[in-house]
Amino acid sequence: AQTVTQSQPEMSVQEAETVTLSCTYDTSESDYYLFWYKQPPSRQMILVIRQEAYKQQNATENRFSVNFQKAAKSFSLKISDSQLGDAAMYFCAYRSYGGSQGNLIFGKGTKLSVKP
Amino acid sequence: KAGVTQTPRYLIKTRGQQVTLSCSPISGHRSVSWYQQTPGQGLQFLFEYFSETQRNKGNFPGRFSGRQFSNSRSEMNVSTLELGDSALYLCASSLDPGSNNSPLHFGNGTRLTVT
Image (cartoon, rainbow over all chains, first blue to last red; front, top):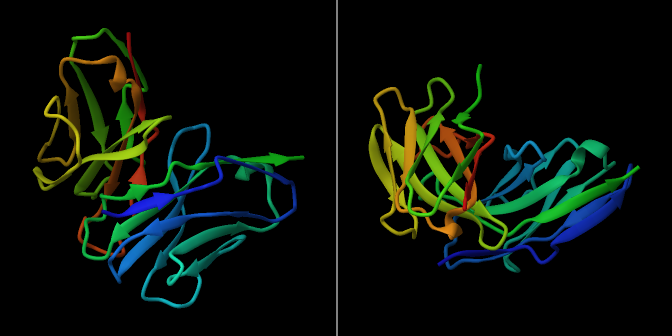
């Protein structure tokens, strides 16, 4: 069975600085998807970024980028120029390539605080 | 376009009672998934429905059940509530569960407290 581990329960960053959130996963599959979701106090999970395992290029979405290391089974999220609105819980998630879109395996999350 | 709507937002029930939570997906979305979120276990997949059929099920006891209607709206039911069922229940919808380009859209969740 696949597992997702986020080893940092809490992180803090100064506004305008850069922060990296860690995620490792365990799988025997060769094709899969990885995601980072953000959950602000409103509780709604918002997709931040997505990475297909067969793509070597790291995904980027504006200030958000990932460092995908397939051999190491590592998938970290880098937030550049941190803003107060980035404060939230961040969850790393895994989905099998042939699996259903709705069936994600989540890590326990990292609470990110942004200091003004 | 309205997002995923979950009702109610908050719910307080007593042990032994049953509860029904509702989820209306984004218009045009045919797949609905449910997750339980607790501080200890994190986010855990409950089940997924597509075209009124349960497509996948997580590792939860039979007290947890769900269904989907012809308009894609979904309900989940928990019978004989236990204290450990206290959690945030999240619903998510997508166009097609088998599509790789159909991301999940989540609702704001229903906070269930069992006393």
